Amino acid sequence: MNLESPKVTVAKSAQYLFDSLSDVKNFEKLMPENIAKFEVLGDDIFNFGLKGMPEIKLKMKDKTPHSKVVLAAASDKLPFTLTANIDALNDAQSAVQLHFEGEFNPMMAMMIKGPISKFIETLAENMNKL
Image 1 (cartoon, rainbow, N blue to C red):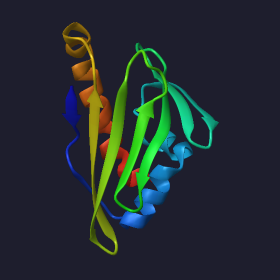
Image 2: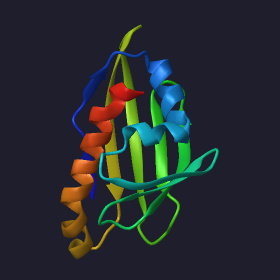
Image 3: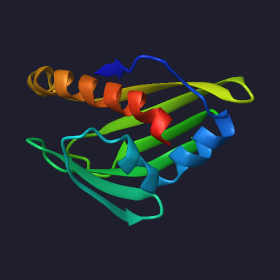
Image 4: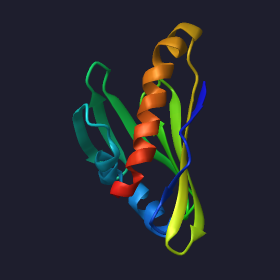
């Protein structure tokens, strides 16, 4: 299952966004209002839970300076990645788009598609909070 957030323009440089997204503590600022739990477990891993959803552990998987940050589920039960693609528009503006990619059975995919789409859309909309 592949989902994409809308591309959002942020009044920050690509380097600033990359540095911010490379620090897992900053993901708390991006979370939706219905967050029930957010806990940093290490330099490259955090745990979060939304009301009515199971808790998810995300671990930093890959980084390409100033253009891409990839997080992956730390559990094999729900294998997925969340990628932030950053495009510099100029020195003070960047465009960010989130890509969610996961391997789920059709029933699971049907159940989580709506909530995950809304979740990544909210993360993208909150980029200006960084």
